Image (cartoon, rainbow, N blue to C red; front, side):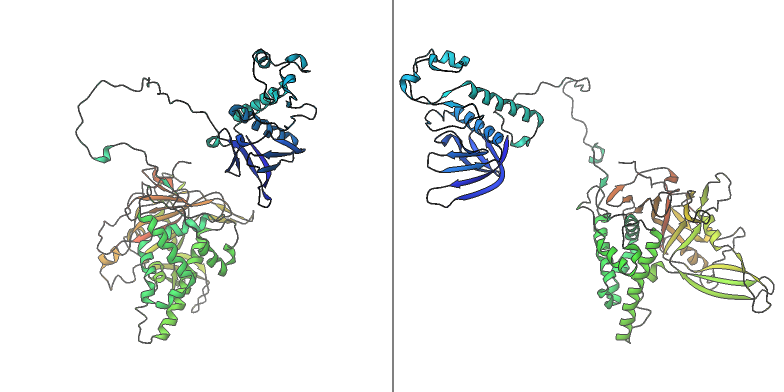
Length: 589
C-alpha cells in the first residue's frame, strides 16, 4: 500500500529539508521508501507516530532525527500510523516506547498509558473497556510490569481494518505486481504432463540427419520496415515504395552527381537519394529480418508541398497526381543543375549529361492528323512519362464482360480517333488522329483510369472492373493488329526488327492498388518485386512477404503499373505471358 505525502526532515546540526510530494511506502517489512528510495527503518522509532495536526504525523527516531509527514488527510495519516504500529509490533519495536501515540479516531485512543506498576498489575478490574480474547488469556499470566502501553480492542480494530484494506488492494491489483512484497515460498515441482496429445513409445533410434530447411518453425512474415504514415499519406508511401523497386532507375539517379555535379546541391535530390538509400538497405534484407522500424518521409513531403501546396495538408490525395508532381519537380531540379553545369564547362557534351528521369521514364509518341477528304497530314511529337488507359476494353473472348485486358486497353489507347479539325488545305471539318509509339521507355508506367467524372452528381466515381495484369508484357504483340502490322514502328526500316522487338518486352516490377470508392477516401498499398525475385506487400510501415494467390487478387484494385524493360540479352517468345500468380492480398491482421 502506498500514500502520497510530503516529508520534512529535521536532522541535528542541519537545516530543515523538505521533500515531495511523492509516493510513500512501507516495504520489505520495516523500511520506509519515499519516491522509490529507501529512507529509514520504522523499527528504529523511539515512539509511536504522533499526530501533530490533523493529517500530519511526527516520526521521532532513536538518533534524535525527526520526520514530519504531511498527508493532508487524517484518514490517510491514521492508515499510515496503523501500518507503522503493525510493523513495530511484529518486530517487537514498541516494547520500550514510552511516548504518546496517534489516536485512530477523534474519540478513541489507540493506547492507554499505565501510570504505575501497581495499576498495571492490578488486573482487568481497573479497566473501563471490555477485554479482548487474547488480552483475557494474557491477563492470567504473571508478566512483569514494565510500564509499556497496553494494546486495546481499538488497536486490534485498526489492525484488522488495515489488513482488510491490504487484502482488498491486493485483489484489485492497485499496485505494481513486481513491487509487491510476497513471503518466500518453497518452489514446487510441476505435476507431470498428462495429455492424449503426447505419445511416447519409449526410446527410438536417431533419425538420419536432414537439412535444416526440413525443420518446422514459426517466423512471422510481417515486419515494420516500411514508411511511416504521417496522416493520410498512404498515397506518398505507396508511390515511393514502387519507385524504390525500380533498381535500375534508383542506381542511375544516385549516380547523377558523377555526371552532373551541381545536382548535389538540390534539396529534393538529396531527400530522394537519402530515402532511397534507406529503403534499399531494408529491401536488400529478407522481410523476416529487416528491422529498425519504419522510415519517415516527412522531409520529402515537406519539400514537395513547398512547390505544390496541394500535398501540404493531411487530406487524401491521388497517387497518380503525386507521382507526376514528384517526378516533374525532381526532373526540373536536375535539369536546372545540368544547365548550370554545361554553362560552367563548355567542353562537356550534352549527350554525356543525361538525366536519370529522362533516361528511364521518358517515352515519345508521334501523333498524326490526316484529313478525311484530301488526306493531308500533319505530325507532332509529344513526350510522356506515363500512359493513362481507359477501362472497358475486353480481350474479345466475351467470357467475362466485367474483365478488361491490358493488351486491349493499350490497343484502345493507340487506336485511331475521328476529331473535329479544320483542314488548312481543303477546309474539311474532320480528321483522323493516329498515334504511334516512337520511343519506348525503359520504365513503362501505366495509369488505369478508375476515377471518372459524373457530371450529374458533380463528383468522381470509381470503376471496379478487374484487369488482367500479365507478369510479362510484349508491346510488339500488344500493339499489333490482326494483320500483324505494328503501327508504332517508325524505326523498323533503320534497325533490325529482332532488336526492336527485344526493346518492347517488359517485366512487371511493381503496382499501386487503391481500396475505396473515390479519390478522396480509401487506402493505397503497393506490391513490388524485390531483387531476389520475391514479391512483397507494402502497407505503409507494414511489409509482408507474399505467397501464391488467385490471379485477380489485384485485378480490381490495381491503379498504377510499373513495367521494366528487359535487357537486350534476354530473349523471350513474342507473346503476352499469363497473368501474374504471386501477388495476393494478405489476410487482414
